[in-house]
Length: 212
Image (cartoon, rainbow, N blue to C red; front, side):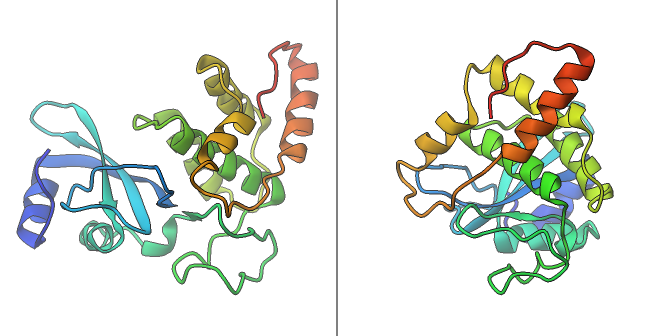
């Protein structure tokens, strides 16, 4: 994929690609190396995108830094505050009032307590497993964004659990590995999500081991 630095490069990209999506918005963690499609190194925060090349019909995945991503999103008329920042260094709040430490473009996105746990699980899995092709997780989060004040369906937790089973990993192992270079993580608690999924497994008679 071409370098996206500058308005001309972004304009050419938009002409040659379709179905351009913002998959995630995250704080960059120590030890997490991502190629910046605008050149240079990613610092602080970055966006994860996907796009389909009109010529080859191939879906490609790429990362952009904060400023470059905002320029592309403005060109595509994607609202800057339409996607929530994943920041493992601060406490999320499920109330209607934003935290004093919230990112300026993150204040309008609020989920239920279960929604927050789903959001955190999805992002930890993507970062910890270094996933780029995240269509399953993108669709889970898309549904979450469309229904932010409703508890997500248990099937979405099952899908994340299935990914962990596939990679023979657990959320605790992922967090432990990430924290080797990031000592300031807040404590993650997925008790509600685990209990929620246990009840669902009883209903559908599923014997999968819960990995979070």
